[in-house]
Image (cartoon, rainbow, N blue to C red; front, side):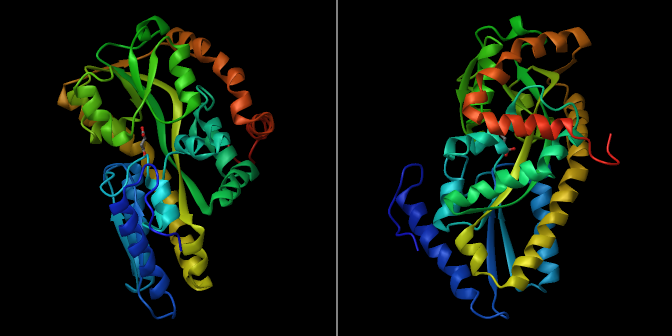
Length: 346
Ligand code: SIN
C-alpha cells in the first residue's frame, strides 16, 4: 500500500484519510460474504447525467448484492476535485471516479484530448464510433500504465459557450478570459477564437465567473444550470462546438482484490448505469435549457449556419496544430474510426 506521504495536489490529511479508507475494502473483501464499501467520487451535481448515472449504479449494485456491497457517492467535489481525484483514486482514498475525458491529458494521457477537438463530432452516434470500438478500448487499456482500470465511457453531451455577451462569431471572443478544463486542445481552441484560456477546477468555476476572474466558459447546459452559472452569465450561445464525456476509472489494486463474481456484478451494473446515463443525457440537457429559459436570467442564442461555419473555420487549425500532442497514430486511428460505418447506425 502507498505510504501516507503528502504529494502535490493532495493534502496530508486527505492522504491519511485515503490510506485509512483503502484499508476498508482490502480487509472487507477477504470472504465472499463480507461487506464491501465502494467510494465513488465525482465533481458535478447529483441532478446531472453523471450524478444520475452514478445513483443508478449504486441502486443496481446494492440491490443485486442484497446490500453486501455499499456504494457511497460523493458528488459536487465534496471529497476531491479535478486536481486531485485521480491521485486520490491511486492512493486508495476512493475506489471509483468518472473524470471528463478532457482531464486525462494532464496526468500523462494526452491521447484522450482527441475527444476535445472542436467540431469533431456532429452527433452522439459519431462519438460511439470511438467509445464503443477498438480505439476506445485501446485508450482505456492504456490507463493501466498508471495503475488505473478504465471501465467504460458515457456522455454528458455537447458544449455551449457562455459569457456576459453573445458569442456568435470569432470576433465576439476577442480578449475574453474563458475558463477551460485542463486540456491543451481546449486551450488552443479558445486561443484560436481570440480568447485567453484560464484553466480552473470545475468546482471553482462559478465563483470565478461571479467575481470576474474569468469572463466566460463552455459546458453542456446541465452543468451550466446545476452550478447556477445562469445567475452570473447573461448570455448562453448554443454553439454545440465540442463534446463532453466521461470515463469511469477504478484503482487496479482495489479492482483486482475483488472476487471474480463481485467484479462481474459491478461491471454489469456499471455498463447498465452508463447506458442509462446515455439515454438521459440529452433530456437532462434539454430540461436544463427549459429551466434556464424559464428562469429568465440568461439570453439564449441559437447560431445560424453561417455563424457556426465561421466558428468552425476559426478553430479548424487546432486539429493539425495539436496532432503532435495527441499523437500521429492516435489521430490516424481517430480518422479511420470516424470513416468506418457502424452497421445499423446512421
Ligand atoms: C464534469 O462534467 O465532470 C466537469 C466538466 C468541467 O470541468 O467543465
